[in-house]
Image (cartoon, rainbow, N blue to C red; front, top):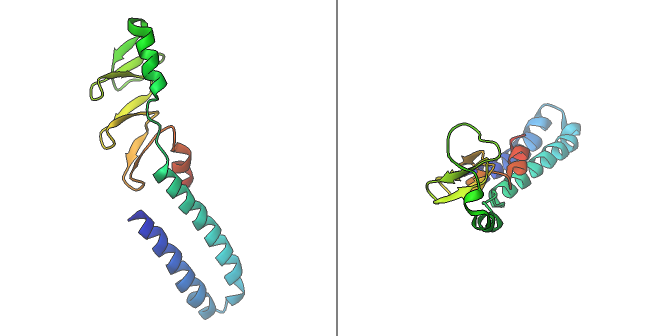
Amino acid sequence: VTLGVFIYEGIAYNLMFLSRVLPALGKADHIPFFFLLFNVIWTLALVAYLRAFATEPGRVPLSWHDFVKDVGPALPVVPSTARWAPGKATYCRKCSIPRPERAHHCNVSGFCVLRMDHYCPWISNCVGLGNYKFFLQLVV
């Protein structure tokens, strides 16, 4: 749906506004400027959308699981709460493993995501450490 909105927006602007509205208003000399401006911004937004959609949001790495096994009971694991527990790992009830601080379980994706912000239905992906930059570029 989001990709369809992007394509519709690009076609509608280029075919309707640039080829019909501006000439009807007598502003045909402005067409190259508006064409370049819109299409550069539209392309950047489309690339940001595709990168946010396709980039892994940042799963808890396998090295974290190895670290948890090596440290064992010396790792301070606290029950997960709504408050931030700096320097402490929390226990994920869904994955049944300790997870690093600021990692949260995504119910839609089914795994824990580092620095998870939210699940975004527009990009069909979690917004986390791996794709946060592309999501912000898309929003801007």
